[in-house]
Image (cartoon, rainbow, N blue to C red; front, top):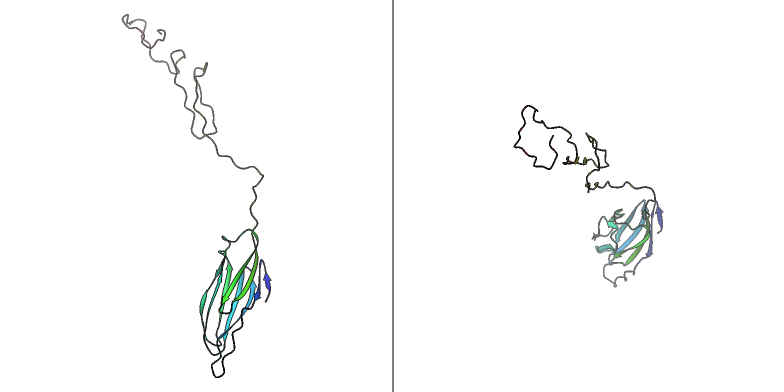
Length: 195
């Protein structure tokens, strides 16, 4: 019986093999009837037992994106069971798909058709870039001012200010000996001219 609604449709494509008639004087064997309807992304399969004996039934599908609420059981004559076959969105393939569900002991086959979400194509729009760490300076500044100030960088980590060298003026002058107290024996050791 075909049916469809919002993405899935179901059809019984084979009713299976008929149960042979009972021998004269023997009770009628159990029979299994089925109906199927689609409701949204769910297929509702109803199995009904008839005859004089219980029916042991099973249902299975070979795909991972369809989940059955029950896959087997025993029905006594006149009893029914409803099996819900739902689509698992995380496993559903992209685009149109088709799957088959087999019900035993009759061998009936249902075909379920659906459509998964389309595959995501790469977005041609701009993507945020990950900031990179700026490299450390490889040389000394040629002539910094008396009080160099750090410049803003793209990284939250500030760039270290280079320490003054002998050829550069010092940012904070050190005390110098007073002219009245010279130390004639002292000689510069860092190569800088005396103050």
